[in-house]
Length: 190
Ligand code: DAT
Ligand code: MG
Image 1 (tube, rainbow, N blue to C red):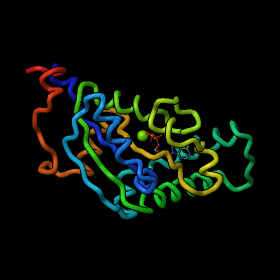
Image 2 (image 1 turned 60 degrees about the horizontal axis):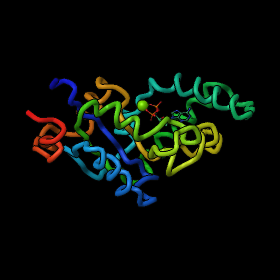
Image 3 (image 1 turned 90 degrees about the vertical axis):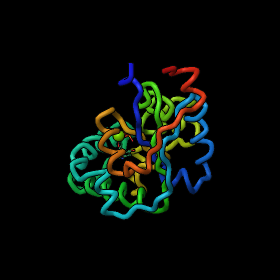
Image 4 (image 1 turned 30 degrees about the horizontal axis):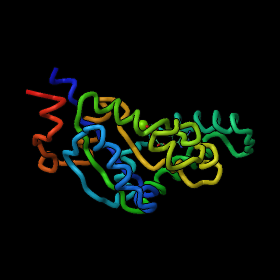
């Protein structure tokens, strides 16, 4: 039973903070009964951003970018590696362009539940009712083409393993709190 109660990392990215969507986003997590066990506003630098989004992402980002470009009919003459590297640099620029709100949420299957509420990566494909689907509409391909970073409002850990690594990157043990919410009594007794 106990292991079904997970912790996951959520970051409201600079576009979410600047658009004053933080309260709306946080309330969606609270309303399903997820518990905030840590939260802070930070303005990360490029070194830290590279720990969160390591350079190892570049080949994947390159592949995804060309799939996106094909899907929306964009043709580029630039070298493949340069396009991927450019998309990565734009991602770093975006995530460091202003403060973010980082939080750790706890609950039953928290990782998957949070991903469900956040929606798919490219907002133009994110379902209505999800955070990305309700509050933004751009495609990743458009964002890469415009060199603006894939602004999709929010980060959420993709797996339990990823959550563990990301939480230890963003939070010290003494910044996370264990306490009982009313949901613990109603949804997660004992
Ligand atoms: P997610 O944030 O949904 O977990 P991810 O882990 O695949 O998505 O990618 C991390 C971030 O990288 C994502 O929030 C924005 C950027 N990104 C992902 N796919 C992209 C793409 N196809 N083009 C440009 N940026 C992308
Ligand atoms: Mg991810």
